[in-house]
Length: 215
Image 1 (cartoon, rainbow, N blue to C red):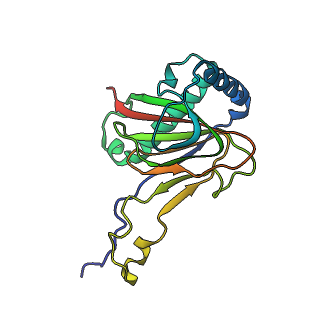
Image 2 (tube, one colour):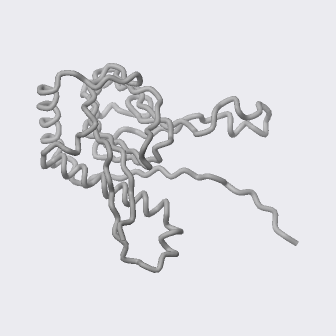
Image 3 (tube, rainbow, N blue to C red):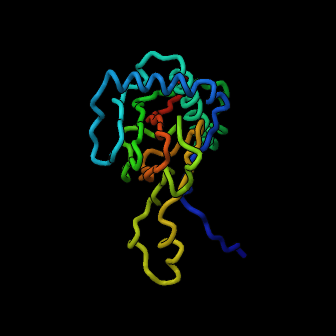
């Protein structure tokens, strides 16, 4: 007699990593971003942005020691996520001394003015995306300045009876903004940021990347 089974199909992995050295380089980062804004007065325009300054998407080409350390931390996070997502494939490979190329395709920073927010959107042309929280006030919480992810199936596409209850509730997952935290997700996930109403500017770094095996 075969056993009945119910399968949790299509799990989506979202990673959360903490930079233990964040406070050592935080002020240098903020100083660099202030200088960047002084030299680049115009924020990047985007329909999903509200009340914020956004840099160009080539931040990884800038020369700054603190920024380089953060981008290296982000790259290591992308590698850890890739290895976790693809563990069953890596376990089957005979060559256990693989080398990986973490290619950051886009990177930028955002400084939110009070009440600033980013509307729901996704990122194309990459496998993974991230947010790294450089500065956020102690009053940040899940309702104030958090990052949210919308479930990948659309409300209304499931029936409204009890059988569809689970799929018609909980349309978003929230991640609290914390200084030195890196959140990584698959780029197809719709996401955004809740308005932050604290006194300190909410400053983040975002990046898109691909990870490939080089040998």
